[in-house]
Length: 406
Image 1: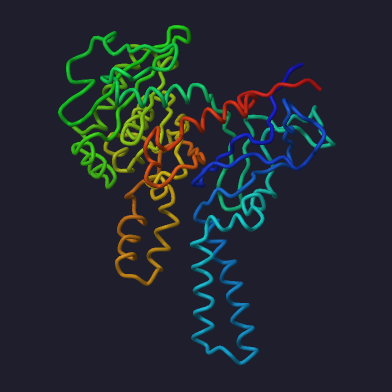
Image 2 (image 1 turned 180 degrees about the vertical axis):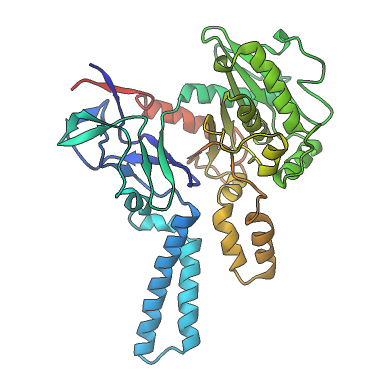
């Protein structure tokens, strides 16, 4: 009987992490599915998820190395006690700053999850005496995180990205929708101002008849009013009654009533991604966001929404996006800035990054290496997110569901 199995390269996320990693199959080298090794109970991730606790562990490693170096200097008579303290402190800071440099070490996350067991395996399918891993499996980390498997619908993500871009440019005669989609904004009879208003808020609806699926898309930052919304919401001050985030909830409720929860996908880029996120939390509809603005806890509280209702959001972002570089890593950057010794940097660290400001993107954080640059990294087309997703689809045609008979 055909069954679903995981393979080398499947996407993994951690509840405490700041980025996506991939399954690395090292437990066996004989059983393949569509040209890739099938994962077993003993396989882990290929790299680190970079949570604050893991990076702090890296700082501890740096401190130990610094202490050893200082001790060596003492034995040679070449270091004063101040030099020892400086060596230990500098190495600790260096170890913490170099979150990405920890990739030069063996995968810390793989080590921290090694004592745990995947929650879902197929005991009737043994691969070199190891049980095969199932798609719904989860894995606990010793530092408190939970690792989950993401099996993305990449073509749907591509359609959502293209529609998010079209939402900006639909008045442009050269703008094109992805194949099979048409605009359906006028199909719903709702009051004027729900789709676009003076606050800068703008959204539109699209329909795919073959799939019987609607996509509600929110436009992102285009003008000064949008920038004001970005800043206010980023520090928890969006107008809870008349702001764009409230308007997004009201519109999503109306569209969901028309289309049905199972037939509605919500999407958006940048500010539009933030609006799509809160609309998804409010309705429970699946969402695909791109380089999205994070959701401030106060924004959720003002709208009486739970921060624990984000599992249906897939948040795609470019690893070159400066917005997500900061907001998704603020828990790491904050302590580093505070400990930098520079008054201004310390203020930024304590005032912005150690509080709730500059919140992380909502949902499952899926960072993709786009090989763009920090200037273009936030924009949809310039960031190369679209081509990266297309490449993922071409190179991983079996990543959705792998079936095999044993």
